Length: 247
Image 1 (cartoon, rainbow, N blue to C red):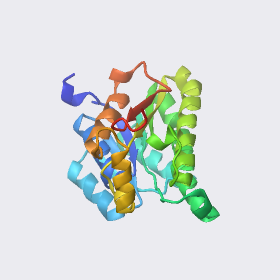
Image 2: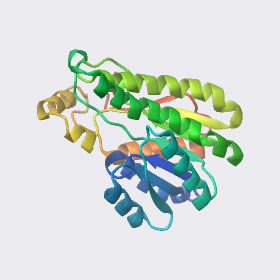
Image 3: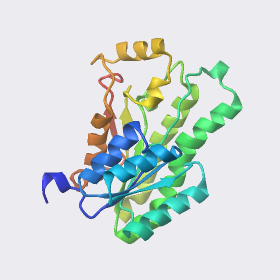
Image 4: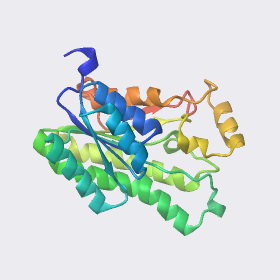
């Protein structure tokens, strides 16, 4: 198998794939031979990305906090491409709010997408991955899952949960040859950070030893590795790509 086709024959689901980091992940996975189901709530952007990738990609409108939507996404993957081998739980939202400024509705919205969405995704792909003889689940956490933050209370709570769920699922699913790993990006040049106050982003960059934002392609490369058989003995691991922020 050539280095450019390391996912040949695999079928992947990537959430939050209409733009930014998810788009970069979906494009790279497809470039390396996988067929990809891209999901997002941004319909026009998601459809455009899938059409640009070509016949190896499909787009599905998807609220990751919806159990019914997850069933539809997995059904599309199986009916269209025959299996599910890879899940990238990438979709997430963030609000730059402290504990004292976070109302219950906002907290529940963030946890619903960032945490419950990951739970529902892992559960939804379990049976298809068993039938396929195994798989790779990649849960996108955050540097905020490795340390406390003073301005992202709900987001931090949800990402610590993603880290814990990944480790528990890795223990449970290893007997099915299903690997579960977490990738923890630092400050990445994507729309989720473009919405932050400029001063906040300046502080985050200054807190990063490499003194820059990471690029979506740099996270996508890590996702590609963890998704592939090259990481075949890695499960329950934390892959941190944060420019040194969490050192």
